[in-house]
Length: 595
Image (cartoon, rainbow, N blue to C red; front, side, top):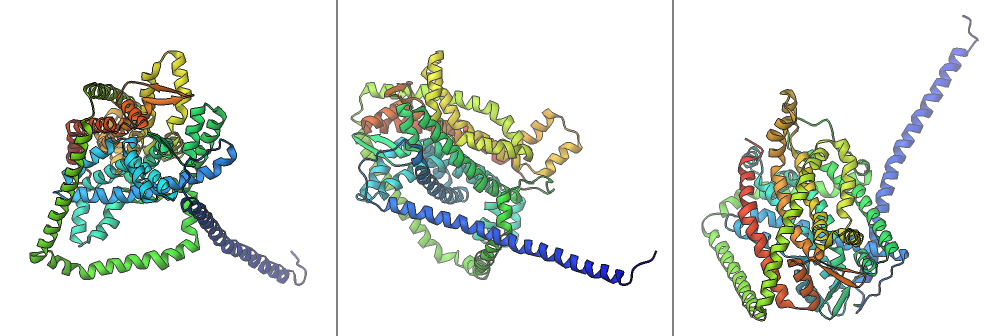
């Protein structure tokens, strides 16, 4: 074959021109991709800054005696912003409280029984029982500012979110594998190292899924927290919850649909921008000896991990701070150990005694004042409260039974199959976060027309408000089952019944128990809405303890409100002591991972 003179050299020169151009283009794309990621992160930061400015204008403004709510769809974006900020701040408060309270309860032998009993009582107290004291105290602290009402609403949302998170973190600490605790002791971990490198990672999966259901519970009670009547005073805040409650009270179906559509958009955005990245990030904390081949993925998490701005901030701020903290702990650990003995014990003991005396004096004073208030309750009201407690107890048992029937198999399926979780988890989050109180008018009308009655409607609403506690805990338990145990079941060809009996049920049992405990308290809380509902100017009631509490709150009858709250707390604590606490001890001793 004959080639023209210079053809080979021309071909080589063209190849040398093509390859550098291709490399240059790929390098340009690589250089532009981190820039785009940084631009996205900066946009998120600017949006957050704008939201802070808008919230500051509202909160630092003068208190408005009565807010006129607009049912126009144009008002929804601003209302949604206000509600999302309240929910976010209440969640941060709940997360900090849950970690601190659960940690002290798990490791303090003297305080554990008392703190768990207090947690049982607090989770049994409905939001409306916290309402008078919280709102009046916050308004008294900031009488001329909108900040008082805002802080009151945030604290009320906090009371509807925090308890199951505290139970989850406490139960995770109590079920830490023994080999991990022994390893941390051998390597001389300080308390901070143990918390950040062992306890929080081990509890991450359960805490995250309980955080999701806590936020869903916050949405459930948002309507009651943003708009309520206390005696002759009408408290209301601009927000999505008050918008939905106003639309439901007026029977404005288009406004209800617009409000639900906005809420669903917020929930979907929250799932994609917050929960899915956190779930994908927490997959690394799964306690297993064989790495799973299936992982949860999140595009946003990948963007943040590849962003040069985020990498630089982590390298400059987070990593040096943690390194200095760990070095400081390692350097001063022998000194602290030496100081724990001898003379240093008496000041701490005296401080504990003094704190105990102060708490005892405060409790005694409150108890005396409560007894004075209860003297005004007559026998008829006392009998109605006790009878209502029995009726509400039956509805709570029915709702828990129905919830367990479907949440256990569905939760195990979602937690065991990541592909199914990608589809079902956002749908479950949406369904859990949509407040049943917004759908309740339609459900109630359908049941009344079909002859179901208010009693059936109350059980259905309690089921809609509490089944998600069980579902999300079962999902977390199924995800936390080690992959090596699943591989063993496959190698030995376990049947369906044997796999459920030996692996699945023992693996999810502590999580299921946590879900049932919190769902029980949530069902009692939901009774205040399920048994007393306003529809088109009429009040629909079902005889029960929740109905007594709601009616007493509307009438400003604090004596009956206090009596009903005490009865509800006693009912929940008694059930926890007779049923849940023995089962929890079985879960802690028998179904604990580790040797």
